[in-house]
Image (cartoon, rainbow, N blue to C red; front, side, top):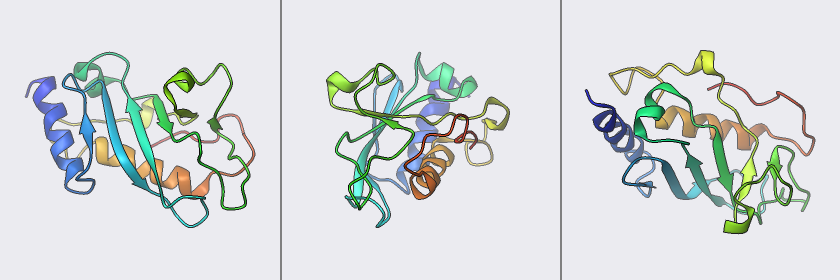
Length: 148
């Protein structure tokens, strides 16, 4: 299976659960316009952008490491979450209207497979980001969010 076909299969699999998922033609980014959030947030959803530096071939071998959400996202009490960067230099897309999520997929747990369903895939990544949004606190702890 070609890397492009693998990426396309990944998108189709994830769209079964996130039908609004869109992507770049070269699979360099994926966007869920209304990623669902729990009641601990000031919104029931946020746009979620996943950027893969490089092209689809890299998605097969290198985990995505650039995640973004709405800069208006806050906890229900109005406080800013840790691990989401709004206005500092770490946020390389702040001028485009995004907040950067400090979330890193551990290379050793990223195991894509030719069979999209059995290995790490886009849906696995989206589910791990859902867990991030359920567990992130207002404190930033170095190395806290690693893994898939």
